[in-house]
Amino acid sequence: MFEYMQYNISPWGWELSLYFFLIGMTAMSFVLVAAPAYVSGLGGTSSDNLRRPVALLTLVLLAVCGALLIMDLGQPSRFLYPLIYFHASSPLSWGALFFVVFGVSVMGYLYAASLGKTGLLKPFAILGSVFGVLLPLYTGWDLMAQQARELWHSPGIPLLFVALSVTSGAGLTALVAMVTGNLDERFVIVLRYVLIGGLLVTLMAFAAESLRMAYGSAEEQQALAIINGELSTRYWILGFAVGIVAPLAVVLFAGRTPMMIMLAGVLSTVGAWALRDVILVAGQLPMSFY
Image (cartoon, rainbow, N blue to C red; front, side, top):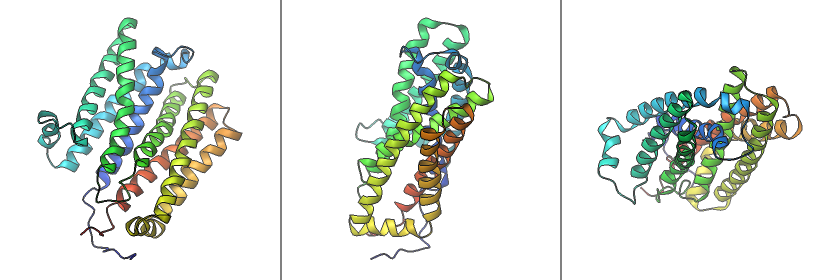
């Protein structure tokens, strides 16, 4: 029951794994910086100073994500096709739409922030935040829609991917804030609570998915056997220990200084990549439906 073919080539490779990771991280980083424009009490000097750097970095990473997606699809027209021939039941169509609208929103936000047009800042911040949350949600939905892959076909996958995006987005934001000298005490408090909430949700989703594999169907147990074999380092050490337990301990017991928040953010980011990569790879290897 726990056998699979080593020579089976996963059709989705590192390009898509990196795409899922980057798109979620950059989207939630933008949401964290844009939120003070429409949520009173979150604003401050640090978040104001981070508007342009984070928006610029978001656009750069979106360009990288676009290139990765085209590499995976093989040609640019395959990215445009889901938009031109939009299907409401297709995760690809929705993902392409979310990608484009989010990119336009970030450009509008950057324009408003650069020229000091406060009247435009709030609507672009809200629009970008909505689609910034939808982007990582779509990546999980894209996997959940694969009914022939039982590891992916779970409502917990989109939740896990959003939670991973929150923690890695906070990590990227903390790193940018530290580099630009904008990680002040008030912003440290905000990032600390974001990381605590994101890591707790990640821990619960991780536990739920691991238990589902352990006590689930033959294919789900087969996927866990694969994970506990060649993917164990990425899943249990990088994903769980480094990416969840360690940063959670830091933010709960030592995460009240800029350096500790940045450390917790970096550890969370490592875990976010590792867990996404393992889920993407392990979900493709069992061949029960062939």
